[in-house]
Length: 198
Image: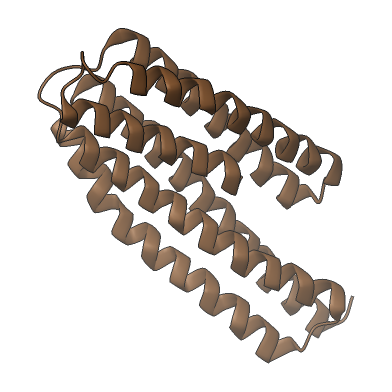
């Protein structure tokens, strides 16, 4: 391997590591957001909200590194496609961090704990969405198209199941206060989006 190829590979590994860390932080933020919602933990909610700023900075650093890599090394088509995909995935992961912030902001609006059956629904959706996100990240890192297709199919199945959750929520119109109903609706949407983005 030539010196330029070594430098190129080192730079590529740095970018891959940055993207992996951003994804890990986004996943952790989503999981912490769920805990803040269920436990009505304002301190945890505020920590997730504040920790989004460093994640945003890392995301900008990753974008900048991708553009710098392309300008510096003028890579062939395969590596250029990887950099383009990395920029896209980076934007999605940054948005997922923003979704965690939204869940936390919604949790701060609650005046009482969530009804148990909706808590169970949210917990199930969150588990599935986080699992899909984790699998999607792994498939991207390893270039595993079979796992990627499995994620796409699983996300579609989750989306189809969501219709019954929304119907159940709207049927509770008389029994739920408006704030709680809106929080549940927003949180359902957030975790559904995470699955879509995975």
